[in-house]
Amino acid sequence: MTSKALLLVMMEPPATLEEEFNDWYDTEHFPQRRSMPGFESASRWVCVDGWPRYAALYDLESSDALRSDAYLAVSGAQSTPWSKRVLARTCGRRRVIATALTADPSHRDDVPVSRLLVACYPRVKESHALVAQALDRLGARDDVMDVRGFEERAEDATSLWLMVGFNAPISAAALHETLGALKGQGATVFNLYVPYTRG
Image 1 (tube, one colour):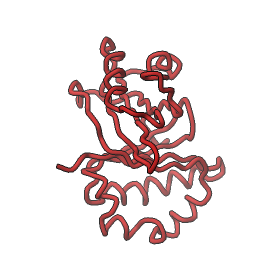
Image 2 (image 1 turned 180 degrees about the horizontal axis):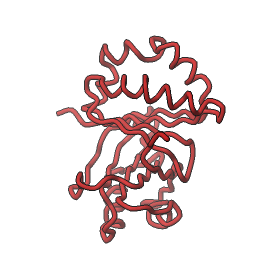
Image 3 (image 1 turned 60 degrees about the vertical axis):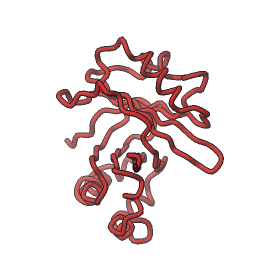
Image 4 (image 1 turned 90 degrees about the vertical axis):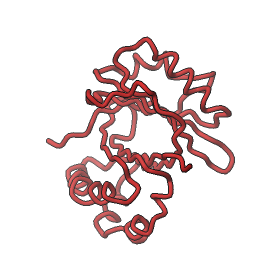
């Protein structure tokens, strides 16, 4: 059985390019990616605490979606001229491909996510134990929509990416004591996002 996966892309345009950056994302890049085979959902986010400013999340049937002919035909050297020009001017660009570990069974689709915490714990030995601790620490909260863990594997290490959705506004500072470190492993990314809206 193939594991679900996540593609997370974070970046920030210079202020002088922000309007065009969002035009490009809204009219070309995001619709193109969202329509790819194996892409189950897609969402854009704006960082209100942390950096860089913009993030896009794509839930994938598996990481194989990023190796399909359709995806490869519009990626990398095959990207559109507009993509190449905009991406060359962004900073803080990070592309994460990670395999799903778990989904919180209490996930609710009836209420929109108001805040999304994205945290990364690098070089972990047991990702499941960290996710279990996060679930335990968040268990008493009634504003938690879902808690999802993803493993990003590199040649020499595995990082845990934790995604926590909330149905009400909350600050990163209020979450730091609870989730800033899990099992003694401190987060190197601790970004709080709101859903992206234009205008």
